[in-house]
Amino acid sequence: MNPSQAAPGSQASLREANRLRVLDALREQGAMTQVELAGATGLSPATVSNMVKELDGAGALELSPSIRNGRRAVLVSLATGNTLLAGIAFGDRDVRVAVATGPRDIVGRQRMPLPANHNADEGMERAARLLHDLVEKAGKTMPDVKAVGVGIPAPVDSVSGQVGSESILPGWRGVDVADEMRGRVGAPVSVDNTSNLGALGELRCGALQGVQNGAYIKLSYGVGAGIVLGGEVFRGIAGTAGEIGHLTIDEHGPVCRCGNRGCLETFIGAHALSDALAGSHGRLTLRDIIAKAIDGDAGCRRVIEDAGRHLGVALAGLVNLLNPEVVVLGGQLSLVGHVLADPMQRALERSAIPSAVASLVVRESELQTDADVVGAVVAAETLYAATEGHLVTITSMA
Ligand SMILES: [Zn+2]
Image 1: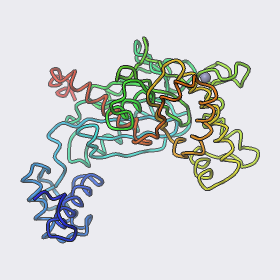
Image 2: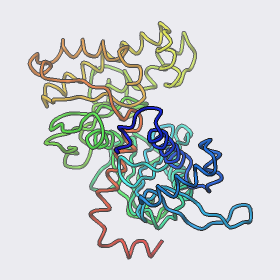
Image 3: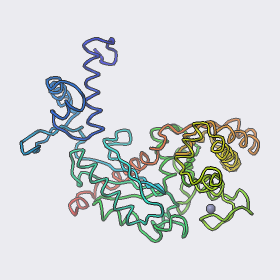
Image 4: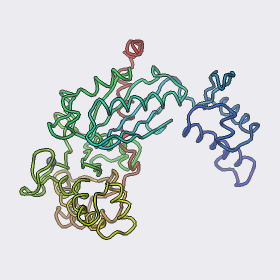
């Protein structure tokens, strides 16, 4: 009998629920002994023992000898073979790391805040430490990590491998991120912009699945787009396509961190929203502004509505140029939902070619703030497939 068709309350449905509890606990908390697993799931030791036997027989688990409190013990973990992929997504204020066996199969994840204006060394050091921790929790070792995808919140020059702007993310200027990270993790590394990775994540497992021409808009501290053409992420000749945040909205507007004037980001980036509220609300973080807007704070809603209007004008440009099927709104700021999306839609309808808007679907991100880290795992998977033949040499150096 198929367990998913088991009648509720039946013996079979209870077994299925217990099985999921065991798998969820291992996914969330990493490798553990059967005694610890009983504590984590609230199941009896006898039930855990049965479940582990059954799941191990089905190849879903790995059992490995270990020492706990000075005594021999068996550690139970999710079966990953000996192949792990890692995704690392840097934000302006945090880094998120995931280890996975595939883009849909994340076996562990963690986030750590980063100081504002951190430098590249500091960021990469913390990311590498998080990765080591997650690999250990999964009951694995670093040589099991076969490839790493890294995202940074700035244009990446695909020719030099460096940040493609002198003034965006100044702490990362002149750093060859792939090369530096490879030295820290002992596996091949690919680097891309987090908006492109967001598009890649949504394309593979989220709101852009099956879409030929579309865009993923990342609304966070900064603003960027990942453009999808012919079912693939389009990066342009040097990797910097999709910099919608630095599209000029007002050529007499405020000076942007990129050196230009009146970029979209100077109107809807986190600094712009926080500056607009400084007089009435004091200094708020982007997270505070979003939470207060959801709670109904009139001032916070107003600045987000204005941001939605500006975003709609910029999107109209993108829609007129590309005539996409789907635009996905992602990143932290998209979590406010209609407060942003409604004024955006009105401005878009006012400014873009009517037939282009009529055939356009605007969707919320399905992966939410995980889109870029999932995309980084997709990038790692592609890199692994491309370098598989050479891995023996690379891992033996680690
Ligand atoms: Zn700019």
